[in-house]
Image 1 (spheres, rainbow, N blue to C red):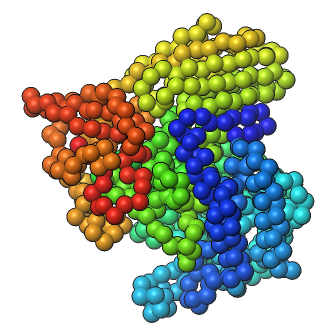
Image 2 (image 1 turned 180 degrees about the vertical axis):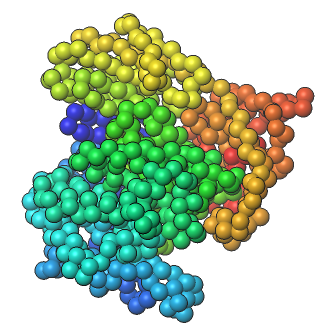
Image 3 (image 1 turned 60 degrees about the vertical axis):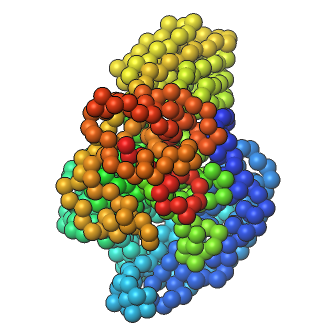
Length: 618
């Protein structure tokens, strides 16, 4: 990953997963001539409002694909991909109308929620979808990212014209952005982030003024939904902000809004913006963190923490990671990295098919993951699948960071990096080992400092103890880091992280409204929805599971739960079926039995018709 101060390339298992996915979805002939072309054709066909009664979201896929491709191009330094992006963006720009509109809705001003009574008659269910401005958000963002990569002023001009058209249209017709689209205007409001990015790129106050207008509408005195900033500062759980959270509390889109709030904070320095994001994170962690270490219940904030069955949209996990990563950057609080890591190694990686060709629509705690193969009338693109590159690259971007003359090693999946310091110094880093499995982490470096330089090494929150062996004196900080000065030349340190199996008890939910069952189910899965108590195993950063890929039987995985208070020990095993595999020894009621377990991410990460593929419950 390249930034102004650091270049990093992942190695090992995570790198293999990333490269496999990037080949299948970004760089291969199929990726560019089939997958990408479908996103571009959406702007020619304009089918998003063709039903006449509601609007869909084909327009989001181009921007998502381009954002992922740009970031992978920067990461990999791929000149052929860079040229493909250049040609593709100019092809899209040629479709821009003289007004500046560039979209997939035939009517640019078809921006209001659909009438449920009309859609009931046409679709058979009361739908209020309209994703017009949400789609333009991704097109705008994609153009801005492409301009950042290519430095082409024609691309920036196209982005400005697109944004101007939207702003002027809304203002001329006196339309409040929060009154547009579906889910209480939250998807539309997520355009805040690219508006701030456009202001950064152009310096034009019009775009910053519109960004402020969006944020001000989220701190109203009348409490009008969604009022995100005021509600986050108010401290009530998200699902209690307004009645019927399933109709407005859309998780991925709301997380995207707070990404924009943090971007606006970086420009304005307004402390309330940062504080609202900090408090929003805390609210989610208390009431919406599910046992997979993602947030929400299948893309809705509706008190997910109250349920033992878990299902998470990968987009939610990716944007939860994003929120955690950005809060770490702004606060320096290591606990946000702990949350990011748990989401990455568990629900995010679980969503990436092992062959790199597709991804899950929802990752479940047990049974099988939810896969969807046609979305918004698209055959080769999917909301969550197109976001997966950003999950990998956000991880790479945060694996090591530079702040002043301090270099921080934040994650331990193997990587090589070169950090350039503000005073001209340079540090080459190499992290190796078999993390996240057991074993020490080796951190080697070659330093060419021009002044006092510090190396920080994160101590994960899950570690029961941590030790650092190094030729230089290291100190352990109260904030959860090892720190040591970097002297000129080559050196290394060995990081040892102690871990134990943590047994987490999950009581039976106090109540299970029918909505959760409906949101969980697909045909044939109803009987697997869990309402009784159960236990899960956490080993370091890994949620463990049993799986038919290891040879576990259905009786093992879906039988009665073990009684509370059991103990478990692990012995590492070689397995081609899992990234991390173990023989587990359980002791309960003076009985001992053994079974195979693996990391949750490996337990069900392939498309299967088998309804009883895996389970995290013991």
